[in-house]
Structure formats: structure tokens, C-alpha cells
Image (tube, rainbow, N blue to C red; front, side, top):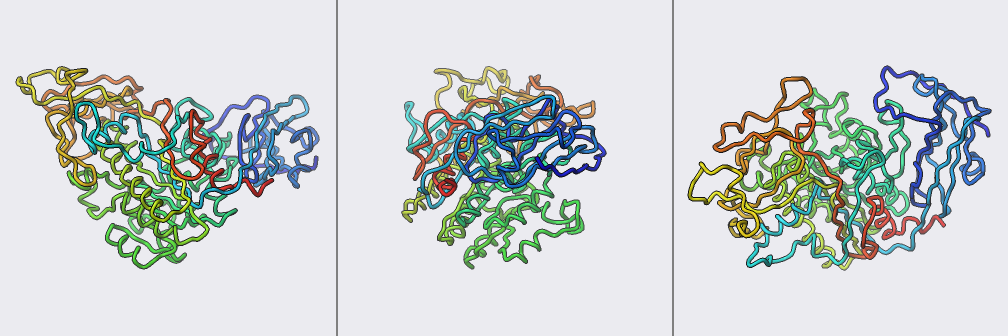
Length: 585
């Protein structure tokens, strides 16, 4: 096998190093991927290997013959006495089982892959809604608040539940039973399992967060093969894990500067959310670590740019083909603050669009492409509020997600377009609805907090005001509220009351560096109780949990959504609906 010699330069530190015994092969064992999709193949050897000893075969055939180019041999990877083989941008076009074997002259390691194709295209458009951290408790609470309940029967169904197809989706990553939003969204975007903090790549042993073996995303495939338009809508920072995973390839989800650069290189047709600070250098009140003004670059590339709801409305009326909307320096504010409490960052950014407005504009822009489009919509603050034990805000943003899904289903029905719509969480939070919290007890504040929790028949029904036309009660500080608790807790003061002055901040910096303690801000609230957490002191918030999440779907291709699925199967459902593997046979 002809192998080119390369000696990699040394790095000062080796972060994100993964231990390797014998050979490590990426993609990993039992990987399943689409025929014709691009990927990088890497073999990591435990020690230095010479060209005459290194070998790599695909179903017994030399890799160079299979891919039409020889693997690159990196004799000393990152200046260390260990070698690697690397092939970038290769494809396997024939469906079937593949055995990949690598050797260093003394030991050999093999993995198996499954390459699959698809049938013909069934959907013109695919829209993936992600409720980040959306738990079943959030869904039930959203139903109770937005539809009401009487004598045990809700007054209606959520749009996210009233869909013909449903499945449970497992969420584990390649390195842990507990996933984060990066590798969870990456599984949806690529069909490959990934490690925590990684998206669009297999996390290798080098410190460089941008050199890991890449796998092609659905957005790239849809644009490259079918000429589809691509849209990304969120209410978090657009550089955050879920929206970034649609496009990005990086081992480190916090590499916001690089993610913006990758957005620019990919040129999605619609990109909307928060995170404006990472489009601007520090000299322009931004947070980039370079001098590049990406806001100007996007404008020069022909994008209409909107920085608030008024500008978004105005921009939409000009009929743009490309749109960038950045509505806050960081994350946007949730609907409870924007519409009712005016907390969080609303004072500084009072004119933020609702997710429903963002989605309506995105659909208008993307549907101008006769070839169709792929759109990812995230209600991302559900997760951030769940981390902060801020259940009321999480539930209101779940209602907002439901409103966006309902209007989108109406849009698709009115057009008669063949549009596949999927709604899913990327991971769970360990939340449970256990009853109600009562403030209507005769004893007043002297009753211990735990005695205010009504369970079973004492729970009764909550007494939130009737919801408005969009499903939101105007108040959350009522006398009988939903009791939603998390199974994962940092030290914090429990008040059993909604936070009306701004999002909850359960912890503050601890006495030792890198630790956190209960936030004294809530210590003086009448009846507040110090809850000793069950998480390490390094954790400042609740954490994700490993239960399956719910996927519901409607439209062409939704028949594949049933039973129990892996999170990587969500990619396959979308790829199959678009027929992305039909030409690879």
C-alpha cells in the first residue's frame, strides 16, 4: 500500500485525549451511514508505525484501491511517538456490510459498518423541531396550562402530541449513557453517534478541536445532492450546540468563533436566533477573538440582516432569498419574560421576535426554492430553564414550541406540499410532575414548604387563569401551581415559588475554585429551605438524564417513526424521506 509520510507538529498541550490500545478506528464499530455520504476514515495506532508495517483494508481489499487514493500516514501525531492513518472526504456508494481492518505489523483490529441506501424521494421539505431538554413533564404541563383540565380530561391536545406517528428515541452517545445537546443533535444531523461536546465529528485523541474525523451532515447532503435550501431557527445563541450541529464540525461545542466561520462557509439560506456577539470583534462590542466582522461579511454575501422583531418583519416584506436574524448578544429571552414579566434581558432587548414569527418568516424565505428545503427549529431555552430548576419558564417555552408546530402544520396543509414534520427532544431532563403546590392553606406562610405539596387527591387541579389565544395564562403566581421537581440537584434554596424578577439562579460561586453553593439571593424568601444537592460541587445546575425521548411525526416518510429508535435513526428517517441515498446505488 502506498502511504505518504507526514510528521505532525507538536502541540503545547493535549486536551481531549482519548486512550488508545492497539488500533482505534473511526467511524467506530457498528456505525451505520448513508451510501454516498462523505466521511473521514482514521486509524490511531498505539505507537509509532512505519509505512511498510501499516495496513488498512476494506472487505479485504486495500483501502487505496477502494477509495482511489492512499491513506496518509502521520508518523508522529501531535509530536507524540504514535502514528495514525487518515483519509479525508471518502464515500462508500454500495449498500451492505463492510469489514474494516487495520494493522501495525504486530496487532490487528477490525470494525464493521453498515452502509444503507434509500428509496426514491417522498418529501419535498423536511422540518425538524427540537425541544431542547423537553421532558414528558414539560409536555403534560404545557397541555394543562394551555388547554386546561376538568374532571380529569384536558380541554384539547397539543399539536406536538396530535400527530399520527410516535416513537421512543434512545439518546446515549458514543462515550456515555448521558448525552449533551452537541452529540445528541449531531446524531440527528449526521446519523453517527458522537462523544459529549462533539458535533459532526468522531472525537479523536488530538487537542485540535477542528481536525477530528468528520462525517457529512444532512444539511450538506441535501444541498449538495438535491439543491435544497437550508434553514436554522432557534431562540438560543445560533452558535449553541443544537443549531450549530446542523452545519458544524468540531470536537468542542464552545468553539463559537470557529462555528460562526463554518456558518459563513456553508451559507445557510436562513439563520436566526441570538448570539450576535460572536459575529463581531471586540472593537465593535463583540466577543470574537479575531478582528473579523461576520455581520458585515454576511451582508456582503447578500443576506438581509435583522436585529429585532420590527426589522425582521420589514426584511420579510422585501422577499429576501437569504436572511440572517440576530436578536440578542447572547441567548434570547423566553416567552414568560418577553410577554408577561419583562425579566431577563428584555429591558436591553425589548423587541425580540417570538419563535412563531421567526418560523413564519423562515418558511416564507425557504419556500422560494422550488427544489425544497430542510429546516431545523429549536425551542432551546426549555433546556436552559430546566437546568436552572425554573419550571414555569420551561413550560411556557414548551407552549411556544407547540404554537410553532401548529402553525407549521397548518402552513403545510394549506400548501399541499409534501412536507415531513418531526418533533423531538434531543435529550431528557429528570423532571417529574408530582402534584400541585398550594398557597391557599389557612395557616399561611407558617406551614412548612413540604406540607404545601398536594399529592394524589390532595393535588386536585391547578388554578391558573384561562389561557389567552396563544395558550398562555397571564399569571404563574397562583394559589395552586404545578409541582414539577428534578431528580438531579445542586445545593440550592427551595422556595416553591415562581421567580418573577428574572430567571432562576439556584447557585453562585463556592468557597473553593470550581465549586458552587446555594445562591444566598433566595435565602431570605419566607419559608425557603436549603436543599442539599445530590450532584458534585462542581455542578452549578441540574443535569441531563438518560431516559428515552418522544418523537412524533406527520407527513411523507413519517411511517418509519414507530416503536423504539436510536437517535441516529432520526437522521435515517429524514434521509429516506428525501431519497438522499437513491442515487448512490
